Image (cartoon, rainbow, N blue to C red; front, top):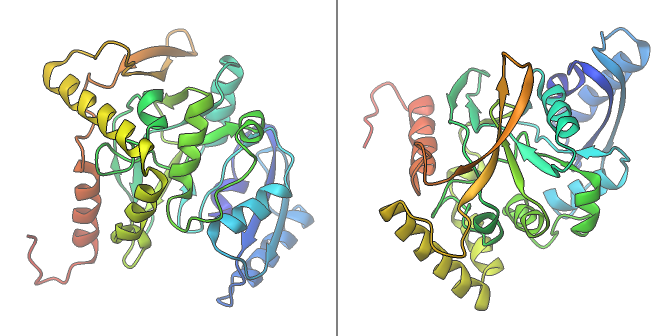
Length: 303
C-alpha cells in the first residue's frame, strides 16, 4: 500500500502518515525502511514532494487510529487507504484534476474495483450516480443498495471540518458508512468514471461476515431515522419498478466522465434508475462468490 501512495505522479505534494495500532508483525521495520528510502532520496519521486511519517501505538480501534492520524496532517485534500488495499496509478492526479476543474465539488470517488491476494484486478463496476438523499438516509449500506466503496474516496478539508473533523470512535465496522451519511448532509457526492482505489478480497477479512457491520448500521438508524429510511426505501423501490421518480425525491447524482476530444472532464447529472447499476445485494453476493472462487479447494463445488 505504501508504494501505491508514494509513487503517485503529479504537480502536488503528498503528506502521508501511516498510523499503526501497535503491530508486532514487522510492520514497524518496513515503515522505518520506507522512511530511510524516502529521506535518502534513493526512491524516485514523481510528484513535487512526499512528506512521510508513521506512528505505532495500541489504540481503541481503527477509527481512533484514523482520528489520531488525521490530526497530524494539514493537507487540503484528504483520504485514507487501509493496509490491504491500494490506490491506482494516477488516482491523486485524477482527483486533483476533477477538484480543480469543479471547485464546487467537496467529495468524490471512482468506480468500485477489486483485486485478489496477488494483486490482480478481478472486478470493476460501471460508474454509477449516488443520489444525495439516498446517501444521507443510509440506503447505500449493502443490503438495500450497494456500498459506497471507501477506497478512492477523496474530500476537501473544509468538508471534514464542517462535519466535525472526526470519525465516530464508538464504531468498529461502519465508520466510513457513518461518515458518508454526514458528508451527504452537507454536500453532493461526485462519482468519477475512473478507478481510483481498489479493495483487496482475501480470506478471513471482516467483510466476509457483515453481521456486526449491519448491527452498527441499524443502531445508527434507529427510531425516527429508521422510519424515514424505510419510507424512502419504499419510494425508491416503487421508482425502480415504474421508472418514475417520486415527487420531492431527487434520484439523480453527479457523474464526471473524461471527454478525450476536448481533453477535459465533463460533469453531468444522471438518474440512478438508468443504466445497469447493481441491484440490492448483488454486489455483496458477487464479493462472496469471488471469495469462494479465489480460496476454494480444488474439489470444492459452488452452491
